[in-house]
Image (tube, rainbow, N blue to C red; front, side, top):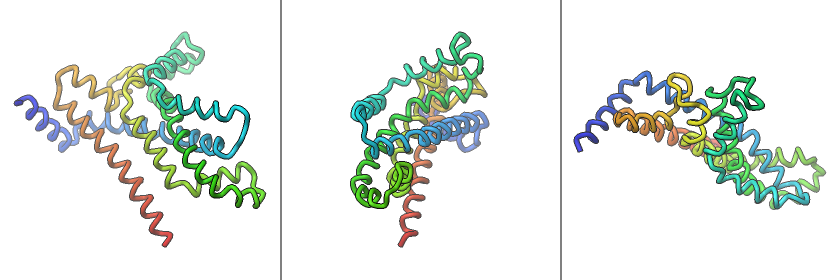
Length: 234
């Protein structure tokens, strides 16, 4: 019991003092996860909309595959990226292994199917409502997708948030491709695992509190932005 209280008080002190190591780890974690979410959204949102608007023979197979990839094991993704960027791998010459860039790539692979699948569900409902109107206006496929993405932008924020939540809490893949190197690739989740293994519960708890705070802050920010935009229409 004393160890728990000691860890809690130490965690509060580290956060209150804005411990440099803690802030460095939190900053890198936020940059990697936000960067991965932005890239995945730029890929997944148009992909989901394209699948909702277009009809082709293998469409159901592609959608089923996309839904299946939502449960893609992160460690398998990490292994794939590791092999891809290792010295003997096809892209080893780029020297990206054990860098934040490799961590972003791994997270993009993990969360893109999530964002694409959720956006497909959202855009499919909008397409059912706007189908006749957009067809009558003789719009192109690109114009239809753009219009649907814009009209459903608030709902699509949920897809981006789902991707961010998965990214910020990811540990397996980024441990493999990042190596958990101090002052280079150590993020909140990998640092928590390391500090817990070392018995440094104070630092581990502080990192955990910051991780929760970042996730909540991003979600609340998007929520309030969405409400502000919605109220501004009236």
